[in-house]
Image (cartoon, rainbow over all chains, first blue to last red; front, side, top):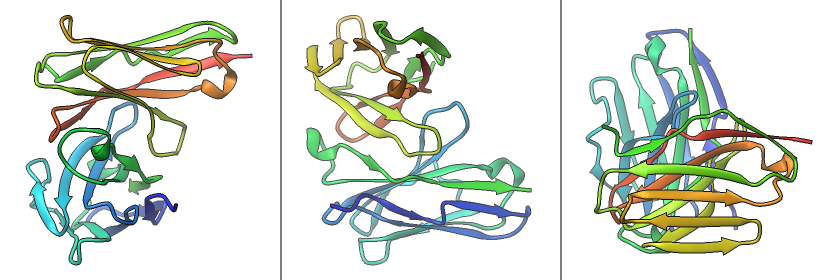
Length: 117
Length: 109
């Protein structure tokens, strides 16, 4: 079974430029998460999708960040314009279901390492 | 106060040592407790999953949950150089997930 796929793995851009990250979750997983991880920190949730609906985007800086999951499968996270402080690893994760139990265990992709110059 | 507190280390131990990693939490609504292992430049991978208080063993790894003290632990027996990674605790109410900051572990051959 293929895991969570993310691309690109690395991205270097100049500040004020736009950038987009793509994620394809594990087949059949309804729940998709985008996290931000700074060096030496745990993942911090940006947005959670149940199918195509964003059910928790309270931590997403909506002035510059946007996300979509149009068909309830793969997802794109965008930053426009990027700032120096956005340099981090952006992780995508998916789980089979929300609610309790091992079914909502999250499986992570390798992440996209963003460097903003 | 953070929802989950984890000592960031770093922790350095000789090969074969027993390693103890710990997290504390404040939210009594947490029901599911997980440990993830994250190698450098990789995403976190699930190592252990427990529900409610008690112990769970899987090979060299033992996860322990004490809900009365709001404290969870991961023990690694006979530690190996391949165990060198960052270990993240994570907790869930069933809807909300929270991660610790991670503890960096190095096992020296």
